[in-house]
Image (cartoon, rainbow, N blue to C red; front, side, top):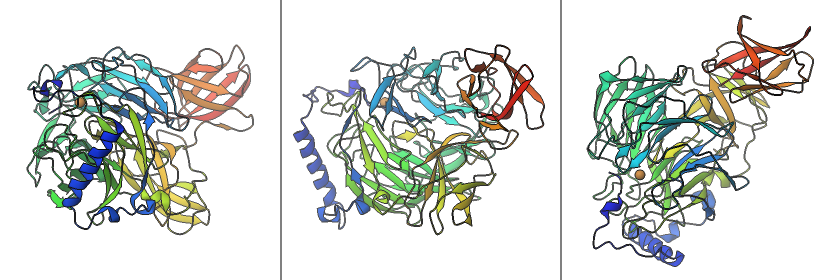
Length: 594
Ligand SMILES: [Cu+2]
């Protein structure tokens, strides 16, 4: 259950915010307590070799407590806080981690604290539900357009409020919305809904009425299925076709509610759940392989630290890093805060203890993978830790995993902007040997779980000394359409900087994007609902026609302001030939509409 201000009992007086020195002593205490329970993991084991334990950077101030945090396709981070505590500011911030500059998104018009969110196929973020007061959900939805920095409020309301729902982008680009409280702690929105991308309507899964826990851990599977991995111990499969249907998969081995633990699908169909619970939090870790005929949970090695409020993050090399959390009993206990990160290797099931962060990261903290292979963590607060509700963490901290200290990073010299399911593409690189390539969706994380995560390792063959042939997953059920980080890893497991690529179905035409055909240097780009033509002087009579892969006319675009044409409203995702006509002159180029 969520941590509430109302938990503040008479013997839990708020105290002034702790000084950095006090934080330090908590940390020493926590480390000391942990060392007792750990075999051969004294301070000496934390050799300061960053190639073994990684390295934390210094604190970076944020304008709000980053409780809801997402990575946008332009590499910027959108985050927001809660409205009814602290700053009373419900306007999301857009932070550029490279330049360390922050701008504001517009006011979305309601408090999106406690919403669910995931990225749509065009990189926009769907936000479902939110906060009226604790346990009372909003029924509103918004779409954040990352190209225009605007919110679209023209969406239907959900069937009822949802406070702590999960949003899951499906194989066809629609979004499943599950759970959430409606009007109180025991009042659940029991009926999942599917936001349909093309029609912008909601389909209500009346055949799948079921109470499931808040912020459920949902993972997309083939055949219109979505797996519920927790936090409840009874795990299930939801068929989202038609009016929906649940089936039971089975109990976890621990049989315990892993409240505020974390979960990842570390390979298609293979899910890992870790930690969570409160009396006390668990260190145990379980996996399930849904590709098996009769899938069943198995214990993996336990983490070195019991944790609650930790976040698990997939790395480009297929390992998982867990950061933050507390081993202390109760909801949000600063005594027992875990500062060390640790890393899980799915191949062995073993955990490696990594360097400690400087800051308590428990309730309302987060972690996510940046396109440069580092991990961004931050947040915690609103409310602050038990026994000290005034302690807030409006800041970020960046962790560099060990792989960044093992040698020179490989470089993706060239790769397409758009990848098509099952369609092999060429990746140019000078890296030698047998490199690997992985594809990860961009994070949309809150409350210890990334709603938008997905990981795939791609098939790679060598074409020449400077070129690899790489094949994306064949099926959108293995990797939902939209923006991804494409990483190249050398034989030592060192990742490149990611290239942001779009993964989609071959709706027609070649995978070229925005390339002019024939003479005439111009460029076509899609920004929001506009097609922009750069490098051509558009005459007053200019018109633009979209042709599909068979050369058939799909749309004639209306002229907008300046060098832009208006795209038709929704439902035109795919690759097209755009023909710009002015008098008897004709220019054509390929265009991809996400
Ligand atoms: Cu919360």
